[in-house]
Image 1 (cartoon, rainbow, N blue to C red):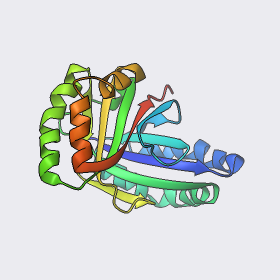
Image 2 (tube, rainbow, N blue to C red):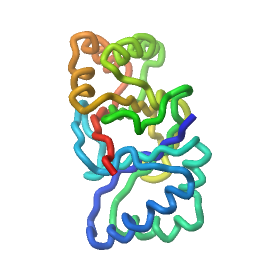
Image 3 (cartoon, rainbow, N blue to C red):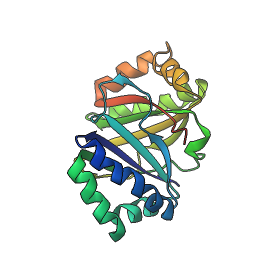
Length: 200
């Protein structure tokens, strides 16, 4: 299963942040990571993820994502990021059997805090068929997730791949998903955003 690192940043020193931007890709690649989302267009669907800049990295597995975050060579770059941004970092385990995220053109990303687990199970049982009908595929669906910076309890993380942002919007705004949104809202709170794939 893939591993993902999700980062949101408010950049307050643009020139200083460029040092981080230019040096961190080599370290990400060393651990087998690739950019899935790196800035780009995003659409707030429910609430909004904090931070003006949102980055999603895909690694071969959760262990590789954690190894990148813990790499001693990353420490000086973390210091640069801390000096130039306010950032929040989450690592999440990918969904078993999911295809590589790069084959999709856009993503739906959600962080959900489940308050009524029994009711939420009804939502979780029904949503895969609706996502599939709209061409979506789960890349992260629950599983292990930990907040490394600024997000001590990230809750339930969901990432689904779609053809493009129009397909993300189409799924989220569809008549067949509307009752499931209501069901989810009755059992949880959260943030949902549509993200455009990093073009490289």
